[in-house]
Length: 83
Image (cartoon, rainbow, N blue to C red; front, side, top):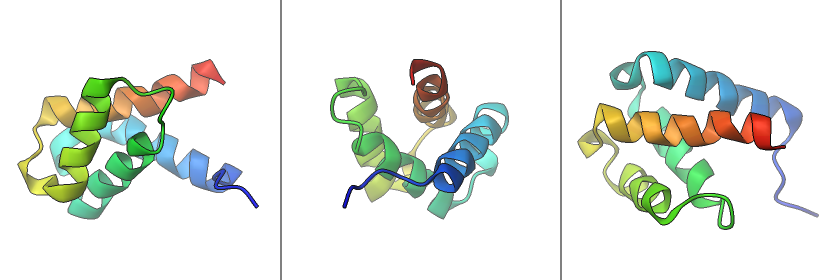
């Protein structure tokens, strides 16, 4: 078994990221945590700065800035072109 997300889960994450790029502060606490968890799992693809923001998003989602949310969302949307 693998930890690879299903196509539906990937599509949901990309829609969430698209929305987060447009309106980052309208994401719910759970959505910010979800983005953080997703980026944190990207060991080889995410930068150290992205990993730091992902950790912050998981532990203190309400303290994350709009720019940090956009950074996470940009990473997720960038996956679409990289794969």
